[in-house]
Image: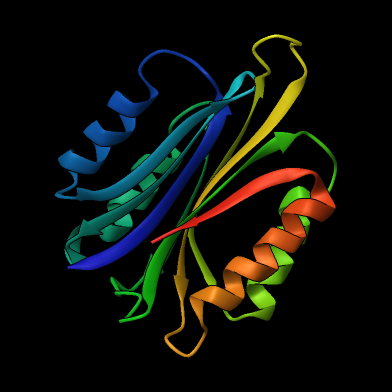
Length: 168
């Protein structure tokens, strides 16, 4: 079995997931993992699919024949991240430019791998002001101390005017 990452982006409409998963199943594939989201008026999906070598090419051809979706496929290996410590980072506060940039740059400098990240804007309950929310799953190398990360994240939170929690 081979592993493929399949991405599809297009105008949101009913039946996209059903159509994609139907084609994958028809071609002997299995969806191992997936993330889907409506962003603006569009829909985006990313999937890790396992498929027999015999069916891989015909699956790719069938997927790319779907109208009004931009689809790409990429071969990948099914790989575990390793024994690094897994943490959750939760950030929320006033929405301002550069939050993701500042946080992701810091994490990269500390060799902290972002496994998943989700962001969205919500409205403050009383004032209705936009609030930025970020939830990330990260992998921290064993040699990096949690106490040091906590301290650094507190400084970043102060600088950005947000709250950041590192949760083990």
